[in-house]
Amino acid sequence: MLDFEIKNPTLILDEAICRKNIKRMSIKAKSLNLKIAPHFKTHQSLKVAEWCKDYGVEEISVSSFRMAFYFRDRGFKNIHIAFPFNPLLIEDLALMQGQPVSIQLVNEEVTKLVAQKVQSQVGFFIEIDAGYGRAGVPIENFELIDRILRAAAENKNLAFKGFYIHAGHTYHTDLEGIEKIHKETQEAFRILKAKYSSQYSNLACRSGDTPSASLMEDFEHIDELGPGNFVFYDLTQAAIGSCNKEDIAVALAAPVVDVKAEKNEILIHCGGVHLSKDVLEGNGVKNFGEVVLFEKDKWIIPPERAFLKSISQEHGLIHAPDSLMEKINTGDIIGILPIHSCMTADCMRSYRTLDNDLVDHLEGTMK
Image 1: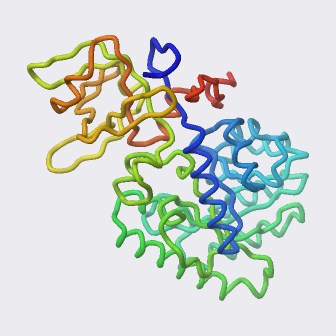
Image 2: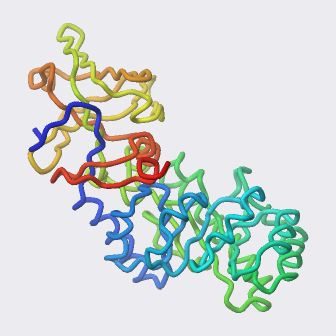
């Protein structure tokens, strides 16, 4: 059991695992001569940000101005808001004055608005559609890219940094699929560099997904990496091969409220409000998280897998083998590895380390 008391669902962060993940990605980027600007939407924590700085991280990505404000004045050389710019937040750019910042543009209309309003230096990436139609300019639409560049050129404060692709569909495939998508990203960047690098000598191409950053070794035509989930990883990443379960740095500590021996089920205080309702499905089985057992300064993965078979708002029902049923009693604390660590962290809004230190989270800190 943990060496401190827990009465309610609590997100536990293993600092050693988290630091190891950050260090590994930082070393990889450096060895490949890639700039790294990790996405902080996963952890949203000033403490974890300091750990990132310990391993040479100088630039970061965030998903909102609110998040940018949280990490402002923390010594980062640039904060990139990796989300299509919301024109309703144009005044927020002025509030970032003094902190180097860059934004993401996807259409001419918003670019014109930014060019009319911005009065201090702002960098921008043009987001390119990764191929699954969520956001960004289609790679073949050079006319739109040119219009965005012309609109931005109306204001000398707008500095073109390059192109950004987040291949989010790598999170829903296998190693072969990830490699295929990664090659498509490389080819897109090759085409863009061939057309625009002579005009923009410092043009950078940034890839944002964690699976590619974790698994691929060939980054030709890519200059920068902006992954986020690698700091914690999760069961989704483990399922597609981005990490091992031993690399997952967060586990939800949940009280056991009932043990149903005749059904091999354990009821815990842990539901969608704690984990979110992200799920892995296979062979007709839904998996909302997997069991780990806490020791004094770590957690261990049982030799026989046990998993959350169903969750509601506050309840979680574990399907457990006999070996686990023999160990667990009502009132115990059991750990759950999350399916999606970013969402779980956002739900829980703070962390406790294995030393019982409180670690901040944006959503639990700012009102």
